[in-house]
Length: 286
View 1 (cartoon, helix red, strand yellow):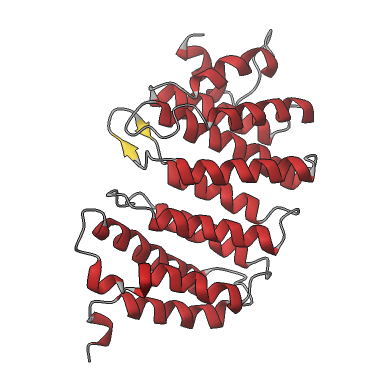
View 2 (cartoon, rainbow, N blue to C red):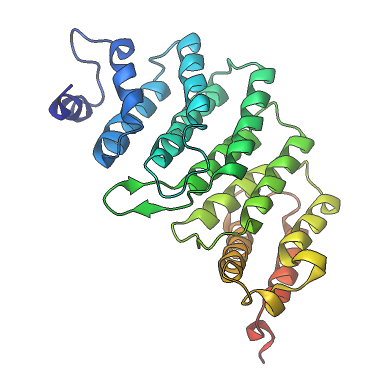
C-alpha cells in the first residue's frame, strides 16, 4: 500500500479505514519491520502495530501468532554486525514487548510460554553483536536498549520468581562485560538500569545475591581492578565506560525513582563503594 494510506490512518487516530480490517493490514506491517526505511519501519509499522495491540484490536490467538513470529525473527541474521537485519530483530523485540505489556493488563499467556520466551530473549541478548544505537540514514537499531526493555517487562511479569530475576541481572552483567569496542551512547545504560530497578522492585533479591553480582562488574578476571587494566586493550575502555555508566545510572535511578525497592538504602552504599573501586582518584579528592 502507498505511504499516504498509512499516513492517513495515523492522522485519523489509528482508526481502521472502511473496507479494511487489522487482520488484512497486519501482514504488510509485519513485513515493514525489516525495512531499511525508518519511516516505514518506525513511524508506520511499529506505531500502528503497537497502537492496535494496546487498543485490543487483536484476539489472544492473533497476539500469540504475532508474538511467535517476533520470537522467530530474533534469529534472522543473528551474529551479523552492521547489516540491515538488525532492524528486523530489534523492532520485532518492540512488538513482542507490546504483547507482553498487553498480557500485564489483560492476562492471557500461559506460564510455560512466557518462560520459553524469556529463555529465547536471554539467548538472543547474549548473541546479538550489532550494538549500534542510531544508524545514519537507517534510523534506530538500538538492540541493547530494546532488549533491556524486554527484560524489564519480563522482570515485572507475574510468573517470574527470584531465580528468574537473578538470570535477568546476570544476563545484563554478561552483556556489559562482553568484549566489544562499542560504547553505549544512546541511553542504553539507563534502559539497562531501569530493567534492574524493575527487578529489584519485586523485593525478591537480597544482598547475598547483589553483592557478588556487583563485585563481578567492579573487578575483572582474577579480581583485577578496572583502573589498573582497562586501557591495555582495544575493548577495555569501552567495557569500562559501559560498566561505569551503568552503575552511575543505577545509582541515580535508585535515588530519584518513586517507590524505590526495599533494598535501596543498602544497595546505594554498595554502588557508591563499587564506583569508588572503579574511580581514577577523583572521588577521593579533598
